[in-house]
Structures are given as structure tokens and as C-alpha cells.
Image (cartoon, rainbow, N blue to C red; front, side, top):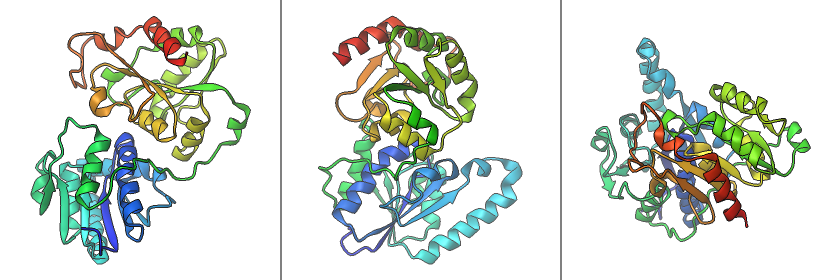
Length: 331
């Protein structure tokens, strides 16, 4: 399907982990059809991951968070209209929706592409906006689902890589070495490991630590730092995505719940210690071999719920359990 195509539009606005997973699709397309120019629609929060990417010709940024607010409706309609005009001007032969939600389905239709391709299993009636669909089980790991799309387009998918843009090392990182990265929180509060558990684990392990996260994680990260007896430093809210890539690449390994930054760490070539409660590591766990996945022993896990009154599944993963697992994993 891509043999005589010069340009391909990819619609994958968010989130961080999903975009990292879809880099395997990008790599497969460019390895098999290196002359194709890739244009990519991404949400404003994640554009830094794709800007100046060597395999992407053009990055188209949308501010989908503003689009969600009713008060911004007039401006949103203007932006969508402008986006549609700009996309149609490109005359895309194929647009591929890797997101599979209503918003991305609409954007796929607005592109005016001759072939508008998505997954049969896509949600929120987004399939109404495609004129061609493929089926890929939602029980597959996300990386493998995206590669099924590449395979449908005619790619050999035997090579699985996650090409990242060039990292940018912050000056202060030169003073750090032999450290572990801690990612203290995820978007779902049900995925979060208790803060005292992180503190206890830090004081058990013979390493130094750097705590990363967004601005929303600053208070959590600082709380861990101040109780770590000087062995952990928080840089939450202080790094760009390209700086975060540099920080992850230099680390020994990463301790994390199920979060997008976990997948970025894997793409950086780092092994991760991942803590899973409400979600399934088979579907969204760290991709590849050699990582340590610690699953909650509670019977209702995974429940796939974003809200829970007691967070029992994550509490059942004790610091001692994680410490013992790491000791066995590292030896």
C-alpha cells in the first residue's frame, strides 16, 4: 500500500506512553519505505518528543486540552477549521489513526486523505470516519497492535525499535552518576504506590536516586526527597522531555508504576522495575525482555479502574516485596 506513496499522515496526539509505543510503527514504515515523508499530529504537551525527530518531516500540534473546555468552543471551531484546511492542502494519500477515539477519528476525516485507516476495535464511534479498517486484538500489547498496522501497510515488522529524538543533557546532570530513577506517580490515582513505600524502599537500597515527574508531581517528589536522608533528589517539573531522555539514558535502572514515562525509559534502553495493580502488564507493561514486573497479589487485580476507595492492590505490593524482587533480579 505504501509502495508509491510520498507522504503519510499519522494521527497520534497522546499520551506519552502511547506515542512512545507508536514509534515502533514509525520505525517500521521508515525502514521499509525510507522515501516516505511522515507528518504527525500530536498534542501540545508531547510535541517536544517529536520536534526535530530525524524520521518525521512535519509535526502538526493541536491543543486538545483547550478543545475540551466549552468556554473555548468558538476558538476551538476556528482552530479545527484551520486545521482541516491545512491538512487538505497537503493532499495526503493515506491518513492513519493510531489513537482510535472520537477526536482522532474526526481529524482523520478532516484530513481529506484518499485512504483513512484505523483499527476496527477503535472506540467512541471513531470507525465511522474511516474508509478502511484492520482488526488487531485489544488484548495484544500496544506495540504489537501498532505493528499490525505497519504490517497491513506492507512493512516487514521483524525489527522493533523505538527511535527517539536527540536528547539534551542538562548541565546539572553532569554531577550525577550511578543513580536510579524513580517515577512516583501516574495519571490514574489507582496506579500510584504509597509515598511512604517509596521512602522505605529508598532507605533499603544501596543507591542514590533522582525523582522525575511533571509539575503536578512536585509536592509528591519533594515529600519523598525530604524523607530520603539526602539520598534522593527531585527534579519533578524541571525537565523537558529531551532532558528527561538524557536523564533516563544515564541511569542504572528505573522504578515506576504503570505510566508513560516507564515506556519512555524502555525506549531509552533502560530496564525497569514496574509495579502493577489495576492494569495489565500483558497489555501495557514494559515491552521487551529483562524488565522486572511486580504484580499485585490481590485477587481483583487487574480491574482497569481509574477510581478505587482504598487502593488496596497497590498497598499489597510492600517495600520488602519490591526490595527482595530487585535483589534477585540484579544478581
